[in-house]
View 1 (cartoon, rainbow, N blue to C red):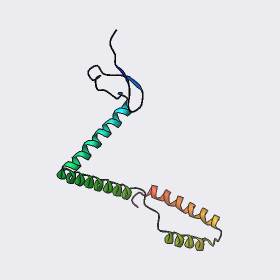
View 2: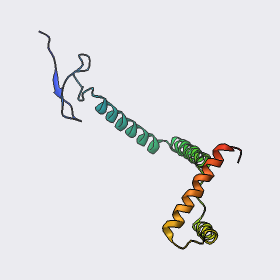
View 3: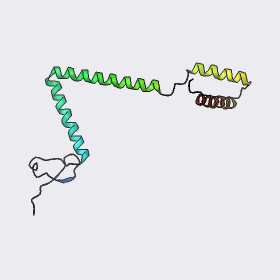
Length: 133
């Protein structure tokens, strides 16, 4: 029978069978969540140590992060501009609602909402027929 080295993972507490080549110092299991967490911690320690010891590396990382954030913001701005157009400001909404109420001689808010939704639906149908607007 083979000599297996069993241990408990220091991250999750699960029992595991150590790799035969690393059994003398293996303290963690090979569960994907444990591996990802250990990798994250190891990289965090490495980068914090490099930032403390090397000012050039610190500046380089700061510049890299700044450029990445600028790209992210530009992407969000571009996605926002190409998405559905925003509704007009509230003052314009009030003017349009007042104009529709005046034209239809309507003072009931519920009837006005119905009229506005009817006009909106007609607008959607027209824009589907004439996509160049």
